[in-house]
Image 1 (cartoon, helix red, strand yellow):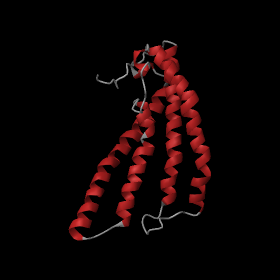
Image 2 (cartoon, one colour):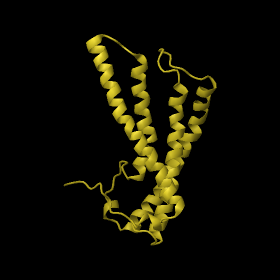
Image 3 (tube, one colour):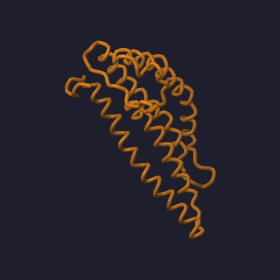
Image 4 (cartoon, one colour):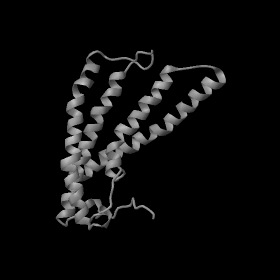
Length: 182
């Protein structure tokens, strides 16, 4: 790709949001490992069990995957069957990515948002809590669904802008890095 100075300001801003969230959420993996280690040590050495600690690992795990989805999309880390894709020109790949974003990503993300909105809002309305005496904020956990959709749609806009620039020859494409070694 060309230097960031040649990209539109909106594209740079969207990529910065995605990068910032992705880098911040990556730290949860380290914290999650430390908490999980502490759970094991407390349980098997000291015989102490903490439902709050166990649920916190689940919350962090959900946050990493749900909030990291946009970052993964930005870095082309999602699973792809690229039998033909990797042999295509930059413009050909840009067309595939553009059509995939328009006809798969945006509709699926919109469906998830529409179908889960009431589910999340109901949880907020009753301030849903853990039934096992754990973290009293299940409504926050469920809110990750809508946050994931928002971050994916932000990245979808960035993808659309980027692919249109590549198709129009105003931005160079990148060669796929996820090549299979045969």
